[in-house]
Image (cartoon, rainbow, N blue to C red; front, side, top):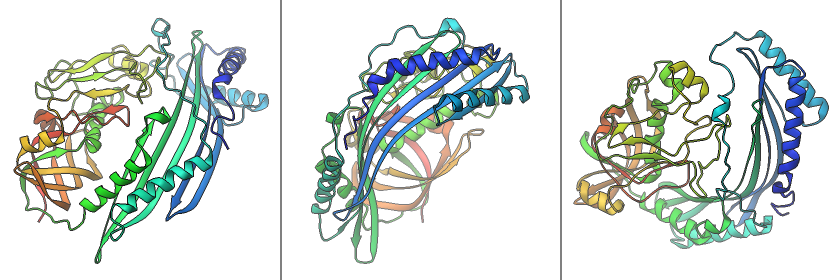
Length: 448
């Protein structure tokens, strides 16, 4: 079965007309303002293990979310049934809910003058005729090449191959209507390395909007295998203060904590250690963090946010100084500010690299910890306190010496941001937060 059976691109005009019809029906309920999300998605996924097919799944989903405003009272209802009867009931449910909610002066649509008016092609939609047989073949190749790295020590633990596409229509009472259509493909391999009585596991994956941009199935399998083998015979380290490198794959979580701390809902609730941080030096002076909604094929690319607002290409951090928060309309009004076009999240947030690659960072660090996996969620955004379990490697004279585990790293996010010494250009691009590996001058490491 092909992933392009339904040709979602051909449904754009019909769904826009349908959205306009729904808004008209809502208006007849004497609703001053309303907004709707109408989405359709379809996809095919397969999983294999030890040269056998475990699952084949196909989905074709529709969803409608309706929000209405009676003055400052808000009601939201949703349905997966797009029949006329179901939509009428959903509209009524949203209206009924609004009648019982407390009026909030900050509720409402984003300001009309902020609506996006230009919709550039960001090249997010690349339909590719993939059958379930092709996806299974891809998964088998991945697993075969993974085990072949060392058949005596490696055991496959599952390979997943997925393809799909989704179409979302957003419309509101300002007369705004826009669509976002995107395809996605991914291939992931999990593998176990065994040696005597010891067992270690690791994984690797590739993901892209364009099937042709994926890493090869053989490369994904080999990378997963090598990562698992490198973790065999781990040790721990003496408790002390060491420099720590967060590999690019886990460094994205540090930026995620930063974005949470400067997001509107944390700021107006006064639950962030970065409250009142605008125009203040939070990072070391070499740090530059940008947001680019218009990046071709980016995972955070969008011509409008979840409120129809034109997103901004901007500097969030310049020379270590915070230049902007992350706000939607509601949080912006609570703070007496203007939305930054981030309803729904950030758009390709990128921490600029300062050195060439991870080996350069390792030599700059000389001796310390390379973290490649983080466990637990010991982060307090109110105080900035940070404590997480980790696995990775011990480094001496810029070279990896041996794997480590059963280690905890701890500090405070404010100190960690200030103590970033360098950022690699080994950019992790598989999400809307993009960064290379990050070297932090010192953290408390609890081992033996």
